[in-house]
Length: 259
Image (cartoon, rainbow, N blue to C red; front, top):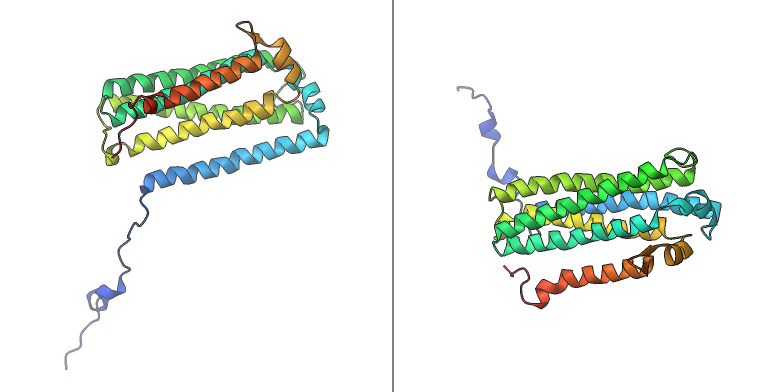
């Protein structure tokens, strides 16, 4: 009887393979990936904020130590305006997404360019803020725990704005080349970037509200005058206008069409 060598073909059976993957979730996998990435970013920023809270409690729970160390020299007038610059970029990227969904490529490119311009303007103003702060011998990335956490948190956020600005420029080029379209499978990349940019803007709400303002309530309300108005009035009025602008397309029936 002739012998038969056993080959891999003899061991192959269809029922030994795992079943095909069935995607039950309606969320596209790359969009889901961005959401998981945002979750990891929340943990990252959260760890820095916890360090800040620990330093504050170790020094003084009423922010007096924070204010004496670094809070009293923070340029609230500039940062208030710079915050509104960054928040305005959420409006422009939102309008870019609406233009994409409506097939208006030219307007999409314009809104993306404006978003990138606002983002890089925010960075330029922040760098100028750093230059002014570093002229003080008592302020620097390693001069004290208070100063270190300030530069760490604001610098970490600034690095995210820089990455986002570069990605916006890439999106602008891709838009001009017609890589995006109103169909769901054609704009998922744009949506993921839009989510990232909104997240970056949202983080700054906490940075501004928890790092710059505490210990500086009197300065912000009395000494920071913009356009003849106090800092809080300018900030909250600007924030209200931004919220209205975000909802204007939907209110006038020009929002993103449903697919």
